[in-house]
Image (cartoon, rainbow, N blue to C red; front, side):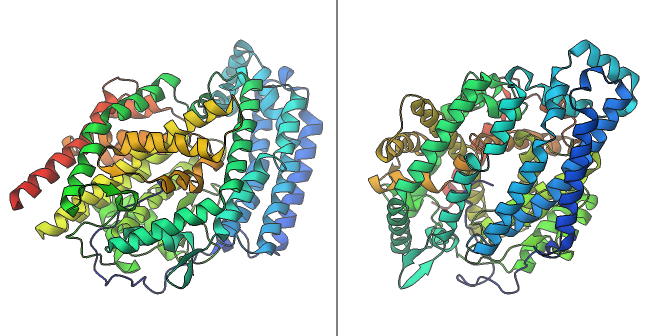
Length: 608
């Protein structure tokens, strides 16, 4: 999810975090790190990988369609078994980043899985060497192989960028001690940071929550503490960022990708020109959206200029109350149920069966995600629930991912997953359903204005801010091709895009120049961030279709989710009369945000 969600009105006194917040039960994967089923699954996967290598390696070019189908089916089964173990290790590590035993277990699983999967690299490499005409003939002769056509299309998109098998093997095996090691160092360092604040040592989740305090002095103190702690660790974060950017540059060069963002676009199954159009449209809209809104917010707060710690400040009319977990659950489920009882029934399982970890605690990942694990099990949601409306929207967002993953699981392990651009569709749509339900139920005009403002800020964070992040990454990776960047140079790039996106209402102090260093997306998945803006604008357009033509929409929407990774964005959107390749598509999505600002200005004018 985007790194910052807004706080709005609630129904519990400020500072009450709630009790009995759920911790997930990973027992559907494995009972514990000592579960003998883990070693058994890894051993079985290793044995099957060895058999596949012995039976098929070097022979794929001459295999008939039926034999190729058998190979892919068996490959899928081994890969799912490996992903099941690795998913368990990832989820355990996400809630215990400071536990050395958990870190050791996680690393051990990564090493074993990497070693086994290395023996299977030949499958995709050799499939990609088959020419189109012979492959089409085999697809025609084997319905079993034809079922995997979407997966084959996805992997074969990388044919022009595939390297020799020996090189691919080295890159795969060395990822443990190269890229993977740097990512783990970043994650563990970030999780271990503590922020001194009024006699306490706060986690990142706790200190960032203070940025939404009603008291401006509290926000300023929290922001300055964040800047100091990030600054004290900047040398390490700078080294990680430079190393990973150089690593990406080298691999992109070997694979002949024309631009740093091109590999991500290909993985997202979206054309470079479509992403370029999105970035250009959002950048051009900044004066009409973020600049305009933040000028309005400054006046609302009675300030001549906003400081960086005011960006997510609660509004003067915001009572800064908190909702108990049970209320958040009921709000989200009811919003989904009004749209589709089938989807709500699926989401109830997350609460009933222990698939959510919502309790903030030291050592836990400070963000939020929904991990799909494997189709034979189910997804798991992680978040840090603080009781704000922002957290209610985060819950709706991550459960949107969850319902998408559950419905797509029927496509099987190789075809259930979607590219990032489409993965955000269900999550953002779930947020929209929840917001509209909250707004409709709120009769108090003051709280309605606060809700409306919070939605605008969420959308700015999801669209404007994420595209600014993307522009920062583009500039950073371009500059890294020339030479290693100093912390000051990286900070200057960050400040440039922040000033451009936030606008003249802000005074951005120099200490804000270190805030790029805590954003995990830059480290985990370069250029991930534009997918949020893609998804938000797509859902804005999709939701407009729903409001105009509600009859039959829910069924078409479920079919979209059930398709998983078998269809691309143009094929998925066609039933709704939408096309992301249309130059006006992004303007349509951005226009929804502008419309909300118009509505807020009108409501404020009524009480002026």
